[in-house]
Image (cartoon, rainbow over all chains, first blue to last red; front, side, top):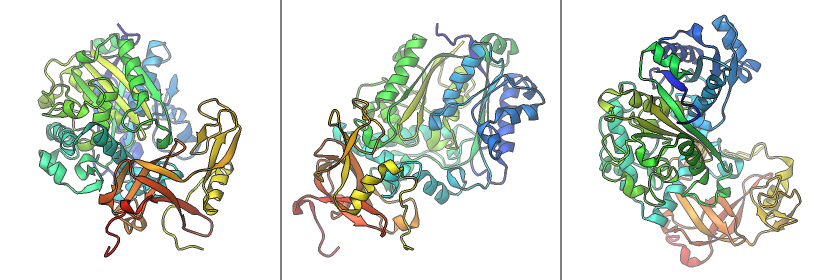
Length: 394
Length: 147
């Protein structure tokens, strides 16, 4: 039994995903927090800890969000912490929340991700604006040449294909499998477009060779939140099967992509997974459902290898024939992931929420039969930082 | 004022400026550890191998081979889109470290992993010079005539 087994995700909530430019970010933040509390059978008044960013607010209020949130709640908060694993930050926030609860620093901790409004930059609902802003998330030694987030990952795919014979069809398998899940999730941004075929993915225009448009994540806005409390309290609330955190780990390796030994494998991801699996005392082949950061299809393929679900270079074969689809050998990103569900802000929270819903056996038509153990790998930046968690149905 | 519309380097620490100065002189120099002789590119405060702070700006051979690459068809801004499709290459230099830049002088379809390339320079504004790569041998070039 892992060290966090007395801590549970008691509530989850996701807002409408898509274009939320007509709403303010704080309203989406509060909707998310309120919704996650309600899902747990709690209310905003029960919150005594916060992890992550708060409602957007100028100056110190943004750098130090907890006092302003406390003021809104009308009672002081006992805990605030923030993780910094990029898009994986909200998923890694589960670890900080679990730390607070298991150490008696707080009883009810919410982790929120909210992106909305008309602001510029990568949180914009405007695709061109977001693409330009995201390009400059890399350093000046790259972006002066016209790199993009897509090109940053395309170079990984190109080398993986060269070294291991991985094919565009195999990458497309991931997009097809995830789109199927999205068609079964009413909040997904791309589910309404219907199923994809391998030919449609490969036939979509190349954005940065060898990645096609349909190898790339959505660009959209949205919110989501989780509430973490003790497993005993979650069980007493009686709303859902408590989902407990069995193991957690991180890995941070490099910031400049030329500093990575290879662009086909990322030891920091393996480190995060090894730590999480070791703490949980769980084997890879016991995992029923996974969530792996999927800004691009190649991220899932390499992520499966790095996390040890298959051997190095075997990712292509692993995902073939619907390997990551619901009913496949390892259902992964079953809501559609960033590719087809939502890619908004610190979007790792959506990855985590889907695994929680699966372990609750509340995923409806997406349900992986009998799922009891789940794995989440949050990725920060371009495979530069990782958080990994093993979760279990209590 | 320049009418250059693409991104220029921003926020370059003073400690990195010798690299950018070397580009303007068309002779790239990178840090080399004074203690263990390991090259450091992109500039760093410490040597990742021995943690020494001391380094000497050392000229690079300029020769390398393509470790990986991509062809950008959807660029970050209109100014870059005007160049698309363009090749971005990660190049393993003869000295062992990798550098990222545009690869010019070859059709995108002709680029291969392992292809030998050499460094070149592009004075994009009076203040800033970028480096690029071009094929090391004419054999790597194709379709120049008529393109």
